[in-house]
Image (cartoon, rainbow, N blue to C red; front, side, top):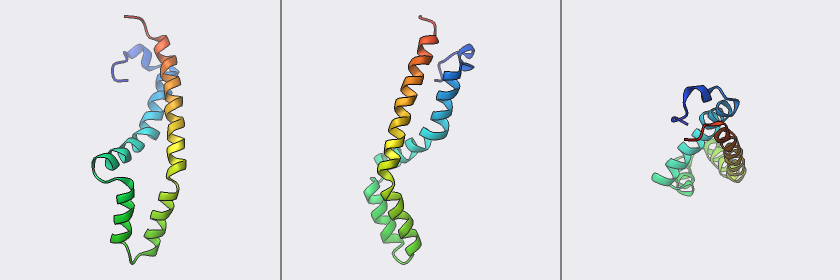
Length: 97
């Protein structure tokens, strides 16, 4: 997206794609990077429970977050599909080089 020249940055597809990436996918990628490069999700939840063994509210929140992972992943997969479709439509508008 950084290489798209100015006239095409005002295209609705570019604006929509940038909004999806900046506001909805970027936080997902940040979580993904933490899981891939530091601790896997299972380890994060395990240590979260160990470190907060006396705080039932935090443990409850951790359990809820863990239970929400499949839906979270499904939603972001659908966003990736949508982003791909929008990107293809934007590419169709770009000049051939």
